[in-house]
Length: 552
Image (cartoon, rainbow, N blue to C red; front, side):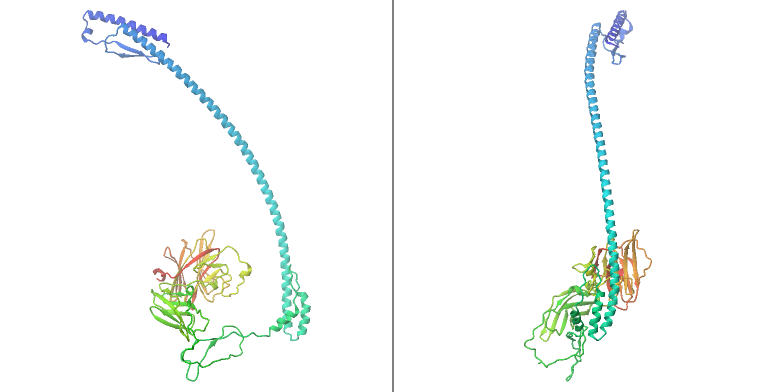
């Protein structure tokens, strides 16, 4: 519907309203009923934008033709103005739509460009990756082939060396047997004649120069065998009670060496009862606190003399019990359980007693001991405090494995503890890690050093083994272990040794859980033992009071 149609419609309606108004005026002149009511029933209408007519009842006064015409002109003006505004807004929206379309096309071009660039980069990276992979594969193959050839050459050379060594060992064995037979011959000329004939047999080439034996040096060495060195000086033992009378004296001494002795010579001279003028007081001893041990029933004190002059005896002073006289540099003292003692030592000789040594404190609440370093395997390292052992990953050279001390372990990487030799109850704890394979328990002092702990009849131990499936625990003695399964891995393990009952028990300290008990009547004294089967560490805790469940 356009504007002309609207205007025509409004004029027709106005004409009809004028006619109706004239008719109603006639009726009012005749005194009709509508004038008495004072309310007209005229209707007002308006034109919506959707081309429909809306009629509303109007109770106002009667409109005049002039007012209707003015309203018509106002509505036409408003419609024209609204149409003008709509055109303007439509143009603005069309401009915005055009800008958005241009922006969208620009974004599309950018996206296509980025996608194309990424495609090219991906192709370049894939090509570079293939080239690098091919190069590395080629180098790896070349290196593997070179190593294989080198390995083959070294194996062949090693095989030849082994054959040469075997031949050299056979020749050396025959040479030694012949040399022994010749050595038994008393004729030196025959020995020199035969030795010259045997020298070519001893020259076996093993890729190193073997110097030929010098015959004069050999003769000198053989002559020196018949020379016996002088023995070391004996050590006089302390005088025992009732060993002297008015006319006789019993003197005892010891020889701490393997020297051959035909006879001994005893020298003596009389002395005055008074102290000699040139005699001096001895120096105070030095207590070896790390080597001291204790338990609830006794304490073992060790010290150094610190004197160059002979010392007759030592006195151990305890603040609570008194003085104990001993002849050697160690003393085992019986004490009361659950108490604390202050101990010092004096040295005594003909000049009198020395001043007191440094006072140490000994507690009898638990078992206190230290690790014996002379029994430690060469691969073990002991901390400064003497309670933690370490097993490193580096391998020692063969020269370091050649042990001079027969008291050290050679096969099992282990160490013994210096437990006090008192038959009673002893308790200590060991702290370990989940990733460490260990052996802990007790062993006799004379246990085999070239055997593993638990593999003989002189050691009892708990062993931890790491398997791909689980943590395995064994309780070994003489190579046998019961079939046990431990569900919770113990981090701190308590070890309880009871000589009276003949038991050795293991506990999980965190859970207060009993793990296993060995039943064995220990005829000899045993020592704590600690071993590591793989690189790691463990810490020993001593001097702690035994819990109630340990000896329940």
